[in-house]
Image (cartoon, rainbow, N blue to C red; front, side, top):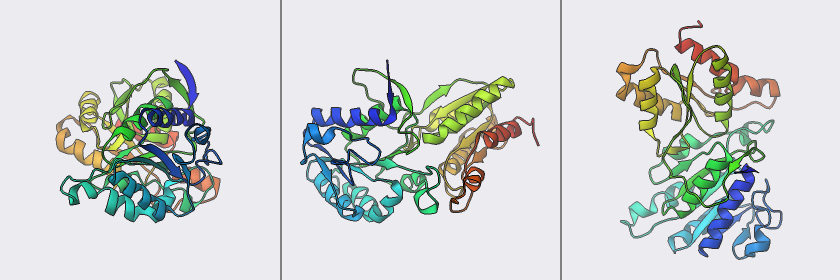
Length: 327
């Protein structure tokens, strides 16, 4: 196994798929000449040329619409948003065109398109550049929403997303691009909609996804030192959600804490909590607990950011509460 960065895993996925299928192309702000705002597309312009690695104006609504039209006519675009905060400018094309075209055309038009880029907080970027929209996009039928937590999953899931005939929202993080992980040399795919049990445990289930899974994993390690066995489930995708893996884990541990970097109202954790109480209520020895971002725009001050976001300490406290070890 090679040890490569998250950004390199994404680059490999895109480059391999572009070599495999000439219909695949990349477009977005600074993806070509500048090698990508986060250097994800470094070297791709030199290999594939300006017709397949396309710099766009700062006009998300415009280039998202161009990509949807291209996808409806048989191409397979990858659209990079410099941040998903900017996808709000293009959301009409994502929701009202890409997500609905297959249904509204009676199955005549597929829209094989990937919208990818970073989501949620990334340090002192303040409210307008620090929002997690996974649950927003997951709420829309017709979209698949993928949120990988490590380089191995990122490559396998992105390759699957590019080959998918439906529009896929592929959400990353500025704070993950430098993360290193083991990725094999050969080709592999990870199916969209299949969760992964990152760590086996017996006392409590923690469910998370994306960047914030690292917080949950660190908390699990600390809890192990105190004799609490945590089962850690990485959803990988939040549309579709692998409910079966979550429910089977809860049936084993009898307790559930869900950790995500989004506002609490109508969040993915709300959906998980509802599904578990509906299908595994008799197995629960404690109420389902959620750890989310504070219900407020994210502040700029680092001390307030720390107070707003999920943290290791908050996860440990929540686990001890469902274990009835802390009041």
